[in-house]
Image 1 (cartoon, rainbow, N blue to C red):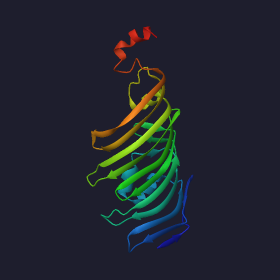
Image 2: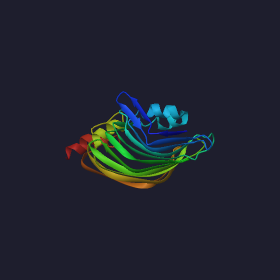
Image 3: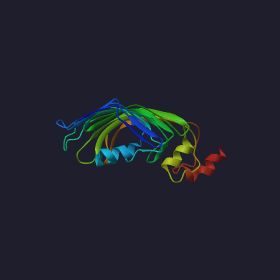
Image 4: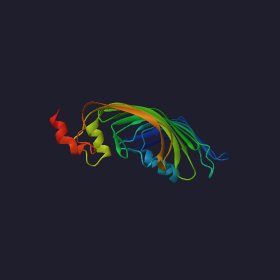
Length: 219
């Protein structure tokens, strides 16, 4: 089944493509130049439960702009997917992080997911990086990633990652490189990183809080 220039329109959302080819014999769907501002969660549910579960943790408040080219494998038990996405949108939420805007390239190839040229605006600053995930059949993934960030408002960031923010202030910059890890064991993480704080107030950080009155008296 060969569909030329299909379109789909929903309220304030639109999707179109140059071509969608459904190869029944090969059990694959081929996408050419798909352009979409459709709700990705509705589209994922239409594709299937696996696709819906895969993107569920990554929440866009407004449907992002998505460009797609590639092939989706629909044969049960086979993973010959080869999908290339370019995504740009926001606000975006990935527990526990709130991001004003995020964009990047995703390559889904069978059991592997590659993220490249990811750029985000968050907490008055910005971050960039890339990552690779190798998804296993046992429900977890091996991964590695690189991230750099600058001009991050520490007080705002702590509202995301801690219930009690204490009296923390400053501008955060740094980087983190994880060379090997898996999603089921935090102790498996191996890598290196660096963080710097400018104009920082850290005395009320939990491990320093008991000394706050003394330290503040000297500043």
